[in-house]
Length: 436
Image (cartoon, rainbow, N blue to C red; front, side, top):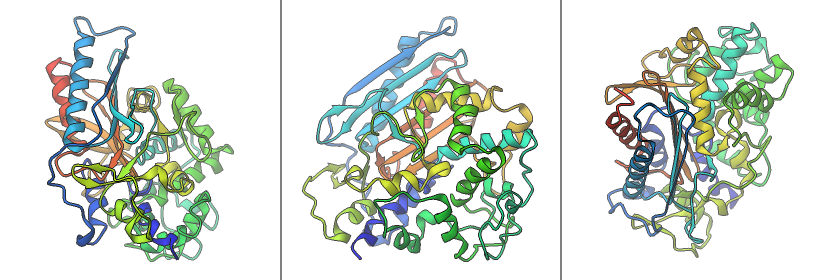
């Protein structure tokens, strides 16, 4: 059927996100056969002209801190990073220890309309959503409503049906990716399943039912393998133990606590304005045109190669399949504000943070968060990769600084990924002695 190849796009679905600073870009290019990979060595230029916007909200700036100069330097770092990777649009927000908020943006909302991105633009942040779901689960653990080491079936009767290990998989194993479930967003048989209803929302139960029919990768607890179905299940567990919709619990416990007014969880709620246009290269371009016989009439090019505007595809599946595992749409300031309250003592206490950030097996991943050092600086972070968007958000515990940024291109080219932006941000913060 003609719709099935389109779902190759969903191979980089809201679920196909990464905690790692590089894995999502690598997944997006290596998931396709080598013959479909687009070269990444072209000169890092884009036909989209550079535009810029910066905004600073200051409550009580650090003594002696030149906020205007810092904002300008962050703007320069973001613009340089965008030029390096060719992303049409980018946005970045910082929340400093004194609650000073620095926001910058660069590029275009839509390559065909020449509309500039601003700090009010919305982006899809993908699996950064997993960190937020984890924070809510840890609150419910502290309240005695959830036991991390209890089997999932303690809360959802009959979960996964006749799946081999359905009785054994625990809440913790959903959160740290040691459950052995396959990653549905990278599985061809899932594309066939979802390709039959691109214009309809996918319910979490439909994806869980699909997972129940797959073979396990390994016995629970034996290995680490990143996946998303576990976080859809956690959304349902939140609803079972609280009696409320997951979106309402996440809003009340996280978004409201952070004062984050511009962050939403589709398909339960949507931003007042659509997200910026996201663009796909390589496999995503091939899936959007060549594989289904569509003709590329736009001729959009980035870094000397053609790209597809993901917004021209049906959005229903793209906005529903990620849910509590990768569905959030937001302005980047709100994302940074939520990351701050998750780790500054507002939402989680020290014991909960220690639980969340403790590494699993031989990975850097804890319970919905990645913990590692970059350039000698400890950072709790999570990446996100969805069709058209690559994002990263994190928190520097030594400095009490949170950040979030997103770009409207996936995969980002080698050498121009989210790790490079995070490194550039660390350099700027060090220059202003905000981080050691």
